[in-house]
Length: 82
View: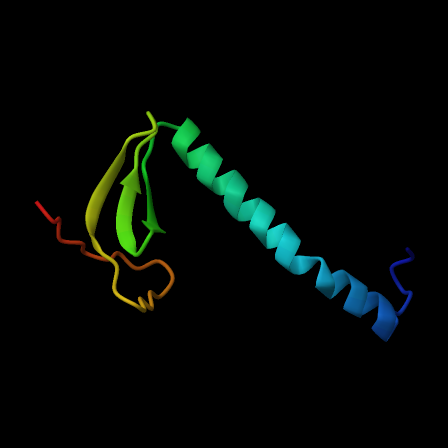
C-alpha cells in the first residue's frame, strides 16, 4: 500500500476486526515469555487470585474480588491467604 493512499471505511473495519485476535496472541506470548524467563504470573482461576510459577506450580493467594481497576505502571499490594 502506498503511503499517501487513503484507507476506505471497509478496509479500516476489516483491520479493526483483527485487533482482538492480535491482542489475545500478544497476551499469550507475554505469559509464555514471562514463565520462560523464570518469573511468576498472577492470574484469576476459578474466582481465586493464583500465582503461577515457572515450574508449573500454582499457589492460591486469595479470593479474587469482582473488580480490580489498576492504573498503568502501578503496584498493587496483595495479602496472602496463609
